[in-house]
Image (cartoon, rainbow, N blue to C red; front, side, top):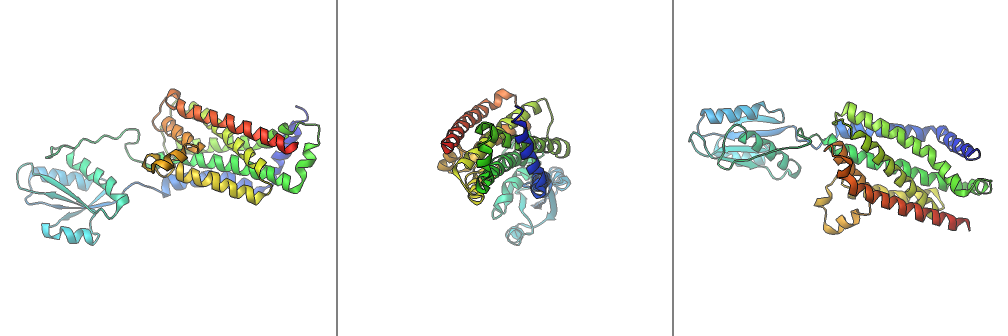
Length: 351
């Protein structure tokens, strides 16, 4: 242990002296959390709505009052039936509420501009919810939103950012760090020291583990303090499941380092095998269920898919650890397999 600690100090000093890397690692979590939490939003906040009303009775006035008072909708007034097509084509409105007759509770038709595919579903849900609230329509609509009633996109992005950042810090940076030692020839010098080779590798990983813990703390403070994610006792489960994912990511970094000899190659392999799948196939941006069946199968080997799924259940749905047991067991299995393969390949390199 006495000979092991100096190697940890050496790697820690190496990281601290690289000021550019430190700035990137510590600022990226803050920047991404702020961007995805506030600047980048999938919420529909300004739906332009017009109405077609044959008469103005109490029922219609009540609905139009609720429409105009809703913060997500901009009510543009009333138009005639003949202006519906032109209003939608010219982009003056995203939706038209048509009251079809002059009975006390008229039939209601909702006409949407479906060319805006990203807006139409959310807009329809907003308008239909407002129209049906407090009154009966020809076809009653019951809408309930659980866990995220305000439909804040930050709730969805925080677990995805965590999955991406830990893969970036643990897998990519550790693989490059070890390969850099091999590329410059200093790894051979370290290997002839009295310390066992695996202890040297572990010593290089410890500073990145500690740095990942700092990043995890920063993310949780922003998520619960700034973005108002629901805070409960499940935060303990969030922490230890995240630590498991960090270990898994570190193992991936070691595995890459055993198969590459140059930093550029390590970066390319990391980007192609980890970063792109994390962004595209983990459910971070696009629901896995909406992907083709083949891609759903491929996504099963992406560790971030299981981590992000677990984080959403723990952080947003507030489920107990039993609710994410499948995800945890899959990550444990992946970590065990990758560590075993990485150690074996590292030992083969030494022979």
